[in-house]
Image (tube, rainbow, N blue to C red; front, side, top):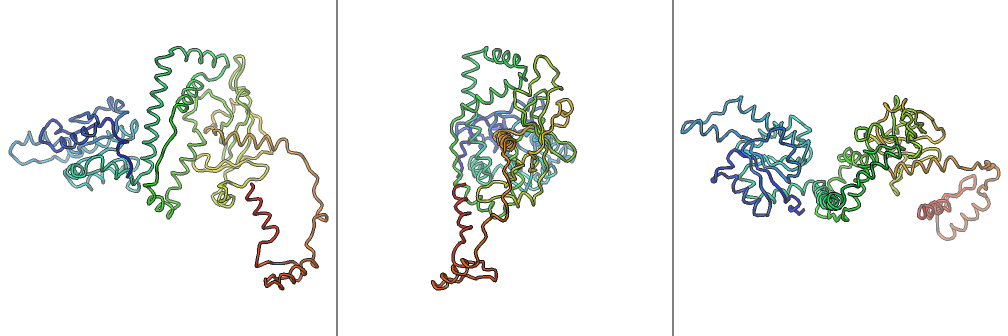
Length: 452
């Protein structure tokens, strides 16, 4: 089973009975603390302003009905009646909290109830961005008794078993936290003036200082991350299930691939101009391949005057992508005059044509930018253009000079094989169809594949 210790850390318990020593939530709290985790208790939902303070929490436990204690105190020894308005307001407040929480911290949330689980899941299903019943949700609706009996970390382990993405991302997050702390130790305390020196250098180069400073911090973070050690063997059954339905995970896989090669415009500085900038005009795509140094406005010149070197691209249909896909190498077949970027944006693959270069100005095109292609995909595209630009022109090979199959030789080969017990078929034109072994051309193609 996956390691539940990945969720060790700070847990937040929200329950209106948390101060009651006899409440069942206290037993769950003891389970968590017994594992060495810290528990933060709340008797009501945090305010919207305080939600951002929960960024580092490992998981949450939320009692769905946060009005039970107050109703019992009001009713005394009499019957407890829950007003419909109170019930609806409680559900609305809980859902709003869950949505606010998801925007700043994606972590498991256990919702406890003494009522029917289906009543709560039906409320959550109204918002598919919050709760999608088709995939393992990060919101787990259960009874307190069930969690108390199974153990909170056993439940987490079972949940992780159905979601390998949770295991991988938590392993990555652990390495990230270690690397981030190492970065802070090196740059926060040991040296305090380094940002000023870099900022000055970037300004002297007339580049976006904010973007470059953020990039150098990101690279320093990655250089401090330890090698990853993932063990996905426990998810073998999940992989078999996925292989049985390849189309099920296609959309999310395309999103993963897109994030590996493309940054949307919302994540880019507005004054940043760089190779790889992708623009969309009508239905056509254009990509800037001009080198970094030439995309900088020099000497205080207007950035809008910076020249872009653009290649035009067209969307490939699903059928075209399927037809061009070479399963053996996992590549997309390309003509010499094009460069194909698979899953560049919204799952769309684009064929950029190398035959014509469009020289335009940033000012005329900046409003059309949709994002930026990243290395090594951008680097490969630039290299293909460079090779295309310097291609030599060769004379056409005359058709009459190409060797043709000799009918006499073909018949002789067929007779020899027939004597050996093989079954070649000789056509009227004298060509041979060998049913016993590969043709010389096929063998040559096979050798090419082996050395490609």
